[in-house]
Image (cartoon, rainbow, N blue to C red; front, top):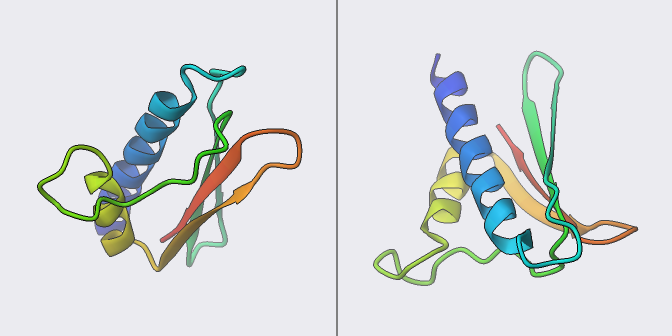
Length: 93
């Protein structure tokens, strides 16, 4: 059940960030992909913004705190630019 709770938090955080960063771009659509091999879960979230996700430098600052928690819950995470526009933020649990 721990993986389910972690996955739920990570998806929620990445989708929230995607909505916030892409709401004023050419494309306000957000797309979520989930893939699993029964051992690991890959979460990918596409948004229309080209701005890289930035974890908060300070936990007391506004914004970015969720990415610090995502980093703590996941084996790894990152992002890559989408070939058409925007970016995909991914997390591996």
